[in-house]
Amino acid sequence: MKLLRTWVFYISLLTGAHSVSGQEVAVADSLQTVVLDSLDIKQKTPISLRFGADLYRIIRSRASDDYQGFEAVADLRIRENLFLAAEVGNEEITKQFEQVNFTTKGTYYKVGFDLNMYDNWEGMDNHVILGLRLASSSHSQFLNSYTLLDRAPFWQDPETEITSGFASGERLNLNAYWLEIIIGFKVQLLNNIYLGLSLRLNRLISDTVPDNFDNIHIPGFNKKTEENKFSASFNYTLTYRIPFSLKNN
Image 1: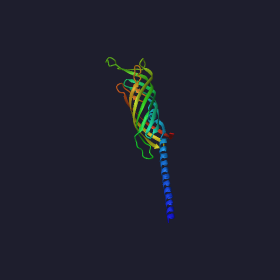
Image 2: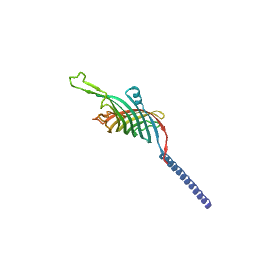
Image 3: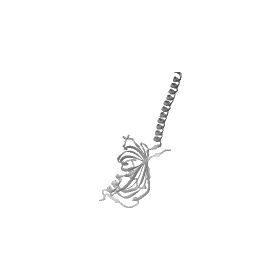
Image 4: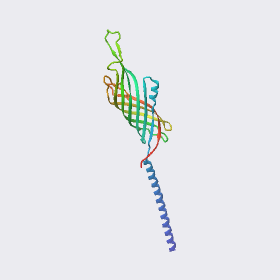
């Protein structure tokens, strides 16, 4: 009887040890899986490059004889809801402003960021954007003609149009700098294809004022007056996304 009890004791010890060992292995495997999954999540940064063009400027160029323009847009996703963004464009526009007819042409550059405020459902990739841009332009102003108003009652024609002289001609090497606050959205039409609309409030920081004239219109900024440093603009974009991921080692 004593021998039987001894064998039962040894068997129970071996069974308990095996059970504890199995539980430890299971716990270790679970911890290892969690750690590896966490490392994979931390290592993968959701980066994607998206590029396209402003449809509004293309359509306006086709519809108007007084406007030619093009704008290329791009953004780079660096976080789940954070994008580095840039626009590069070129404009040439002829306008009549009060008694002055002029042509402005030049190139502009904008760089900044967009923050996606929209919480997508699974499988969706739409954006409600709040953004900021620092922008600059390099342009010229050409005074085509201006009208002198003669209020004296002795002349038959009180308005005289001047098309030549010291005030007319081209002003080169002009620059302007401004900030843009952006509100907009991007909707995924098809896989990796997006349609976007953004509204922009612009605040002029500084500009080079031409001799005997002014920057009445600045490429990328729009209309500018002496009393008002603000303007508004928008773009209507079609973009394509190139998806890829970057692993941080």
